Image (tube, rainbow, N blue to C red; front, side):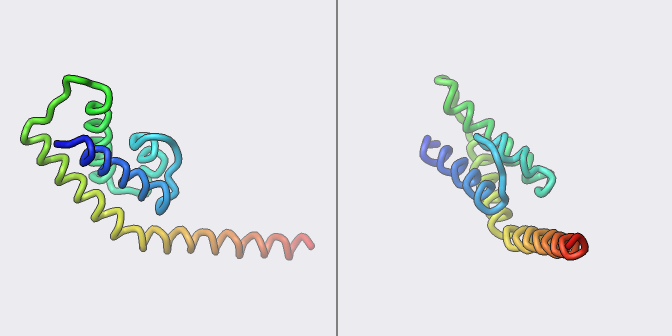
Length: 114
């Protein structure tokens, strides 16, 4: 499996988590940790698998895929991206809803004070 595929998959997941889910930090493990409570357990597990493979590829000169790991990597990337892109709409609606509720409460408090 090529570096481009491994790093491309990881980078795409990192980008979606940062931009659409508000994840904070550097690296996939840290980004996932920052939004872990908003993701299903299996997606968190798959993201950590991708991050681990990516890190092994980046830091271990002798790291090589076996066929099973390569298949799992490809499958997990597809599953993560499908979930994150599909669920983003629901997450955005929830985030907007909480923000709107916060603003309403804040306006109410400010009206009460003044």
